[in-house]
Image 1 (spheres, rainbow, N blue to C red):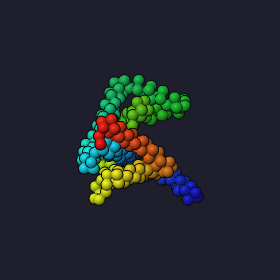
Image 2 (cartoon, helix red, strand yellow):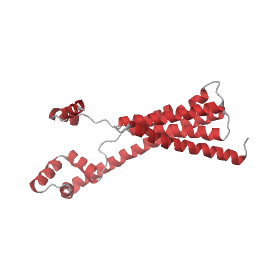
Image 3 (cartoon, rainbow, N blue to C red):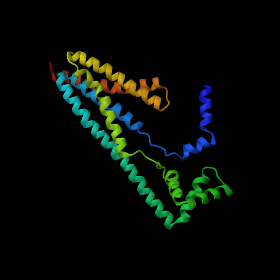
Image 4 (cartoon, rainbow, N blue to C red):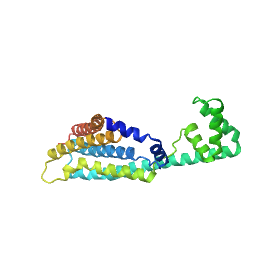
Length: 250
């Protein structure tokens, strides 16, 4: 604990703070990767569970699983890419609009800055100094309007990298439920049992990794992800089994 406290104090020395603020902050792609990993595992195991519950042969399970893995992985990555790209376009449009407002109605924009910081508790000469400092720098002025008035992010992840992180995580973790069906010598029941165990471990591992990355209790995060993913997978198996019984498939 003392070592952690000393490290925390060292991080908050003036020189350390200056270096940290001056360095370029790299956007995190953790959310995209975790989303892709969990969804890849859930959807692929859902196909495996549904097909197994429906009484399909292992070869059919493999074909359906790989088709889902590539098609859904690409679809999810493309959706993530388009979502973040749209966010970039929204910020760019808002930036152009604020620049036009500053050019044509600067006093109105100054008043907005004044009221924004007045709501934060600044008054009198201090408030006036803040307004003058911000409005003296056009770039700072625009950035302040974007983050304080419009609540838009100052920096967003790269759309292509975010989409790629989603796709790679989707495919890598999504392969886990299919792996036992690729092993020779296993009966369909053994392959499904192995897939169930491997999928549960994958859910738990993804949750633990997410917890460690976000400095949350890793065990709790792992169990949470396992329960959510397991519920979705179990539902898929029950639906497949129900349809099998309803259709009278032997």
